[in-house]
Length: 71
Ligand code: 9UX
Image (cartoon, rainbow, N blue to C red):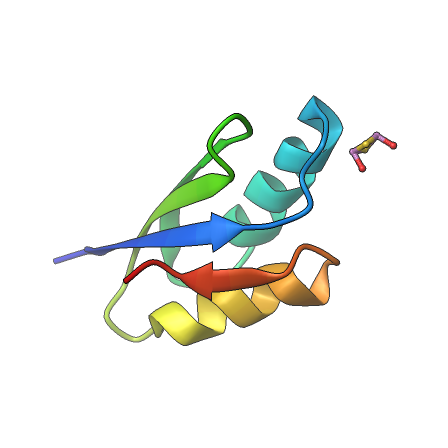
């Protein structure tokens, strides 16, 4: 059963940015769906329990968009 994680993503200023973040998330093993909202600076991810929310945040941060798991 997939888990849903919401992320706060900083630094996205255009649609290419949000596309980049979406692609980075979708490329991670165990991620089944990634939707990024440019306007709110957030992402909603469906993923396997084998993937931790923190690992998702770190993967996006590594792409240059400082990201935290939403409280
Ligand atoms: Mo356009 Mo988004 O250069 O970084 S891709 S602002």
